[in-house]
Each structure stands twice: as structure tokens, then as C-alpha cells.
Amino acid sequence: MSVLIEPGQLAHENALVWLENTDALEYVRQSLDRLPTRRGKPAYHRDGRMVGYAVLGPTSRSSRASGTFLRRVFWLLPHDRDGQPDGLYASGAPSEAVDPRTLAPRVKGCKTRRSEGGPLSDSPRSL
Image 1 (cartoon, rainbow, N blue to C red):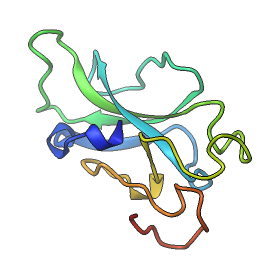
Image 2 (tube, rainbow, N blue to C red; image 1 turned 180 degrees about the vertical axis):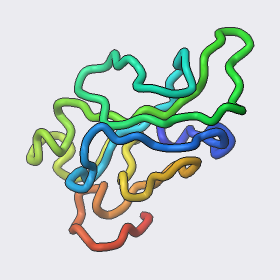
Image 3 (cartoon, helix red, strand yellow; image 1 turned 120 degrees about the vertical axis):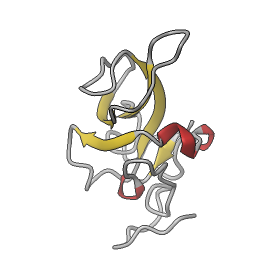
Image 4 (spheres, helix red, strand yellow; image 1 turned 135 degrees about the horizontal axis):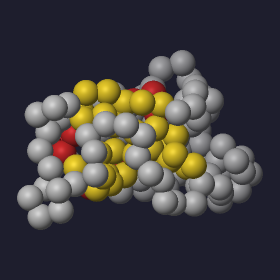
């Protein structure tokens, strides 16, 4: 969940790669996944689709136990607002959802009025 991501876990991010245009997306889900590499498009094993992912710098270290790297992955499920505007998340958003306009490398992002299904505005405002 987004609320459980600590800033230190994002310290080695160099870039965010978006696989689709996020301008029309009011929110994306984010999670920290254990991945075998620092860079490149990771395998995706959830329902729905991957929207983006983080790329880590060369100084990031893998876990001693597993040899994997913690990287953010951004994704959406079939029942999210972009696919079902009048569905489960017509208002409100999942706990791991953030407004993609508030995301950047090393920045966790946050929910906004827009991500919660409120009126759209030109500038992101944190709730």
C-alpha cells in the first residue's frame, strides 16, 4: 500500500517509466515489488495492466537474502475508475492509489481531490 512506502525505500530511484499516457488517469495504484533487476520492464503478474515502473540507480543494493531489488510498479485493475467510471471507485480510490501527477523519482506521491473522484483541477492539491 502507498501509505506503507517509506521515503528511504525510494532513495535509489533514478527515473519513472510510463508505459502509457497518464494525463487522463485520475489515479494509479503503486506497490513496491521485489524484482530481479534494477532496470528494465518487469514481469507483471496481476490482473489488469502495468502502467509504469521505477528504474533504480547503479548504487542500489539487492537484498542479501533474495538477491532482489525493491522497485515501484504502477498498475490498474479492470474495475478501476478508468475502465469503469460508474463502478466501485466512481468516488474514492483504493488505499494504494495516488494521483500520477504527484509522482516523481524518490517521491511517494499522494491522493488528491482528483484521485478521490472529486472535481478536476489544473493543479494537484494534497488531501
